[in-house]
Image (cartoon, rainbow, N blue to C red; front, top):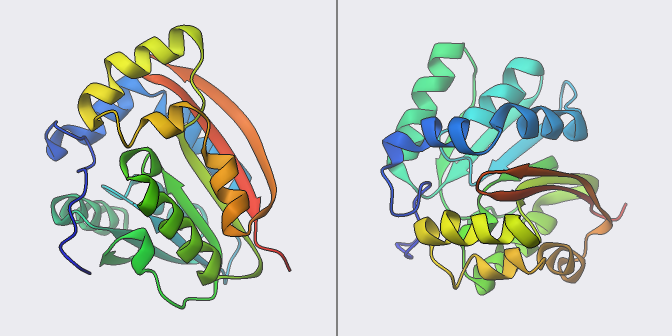
Length: 214
């Protein structure tokens, strides 16, 4: 990977506090369970968690589908140290890599997942990351994203007061304006659908599913 600048998992906060903050602020159990249901991992599949952060979802996938090959990718080495420890504690054989979404390369994955990552990256990286994920999926492969989507009313205010203070405005505002489905379409994904909208004290988290054409 290159040394491109990036926003750490908790933005201006301490990465060591990330898991506690996510549990407290985002109704984590609800959206992670909804992600698993959408993903429906199967034995023998290769599943890549892009922007895996501290590894919670990758471990959840692997423990729920031990026969799947799970790969976690993130640019933050401190987060990956936490992720490796979680994987070891759970007895989950996960391959952890340091890198950005655009660095995935040729993979032929069955599924890609990403949670609370795309709102933290610039528009150019959003586009490049989704293009790389599309290219790394096999024909007919699937994508599941849980991230901040379009914000309305009170949710928009909460998003501005919490998420934009932590992660900045420039990268996060396109998500708040609902850009993700448009970017998925531009990257070549089909069957793009918003499966759920989960309101939290930090704003609305959208669960979005899409497929690579077969």
